[in-house]
Length: 204
Image (tube, rainbow, N blue to C red):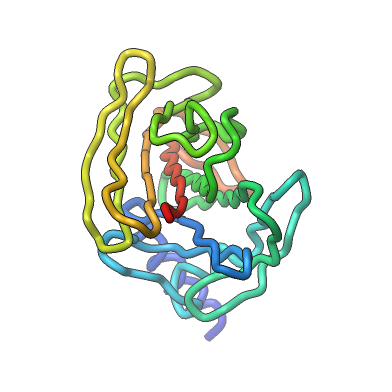
C-alpha cells in the first residue's frame, strides 16, 4: 500500500509539476506561507497530492535557514521583519528536473538563484530577469494580481521590464525557462531541466 501511495504521488507530481509554480505569501504577522499550484487560477495543492514533495524545503531569510511547519495546503515559515525570503525546491519526474525558485519581497537587487526576477531598485516596478548571472533578453514574465488580473510582459535586450501595479494587494511574477541539459539528482537521471522563478510582493 505504501508503495502504491508513493507511485500515485509520483504520477500526480509528474502530471502537474511542469504547469505549476511555487509562490510565497507574507501575512501581517510577517510569517511566510509557501504554496504550490496555479496562483492565477486559485489552485493550491495539498498534502494529499504534490505539496508533500516540498515538505523538506527550507526558507532562507537574512542567511538563516527555517524549517517548514507543514499545513494541509501550504508550508509555513516563522520569518520575521521585512527582509526578503527565499524557498527553493528541486524535483525529478519523468525525464525532467523541475527546479522551483520562489521569493517574496523586493528589497534585494542581486540575484541569488540560477533564475531570478530582481528589482532594479528596492521596491521598484522595474525588474531584470537574471539567468546564470546574466540578464535574460526576450523572456516572458506573467504578472498576476490577487484579484486575478493578469498580464504578460517581455524583457528587452538588457533583460529589463516594467510592470503596472494598478491595485492594492499582492502581485506574483512568474518566469520559466527550459534547459537542454542532462544530469543526475538524488540518484535519479534526468534528460533536461525546467526552471520556474516567482517573485511576490504587496502593494499598499
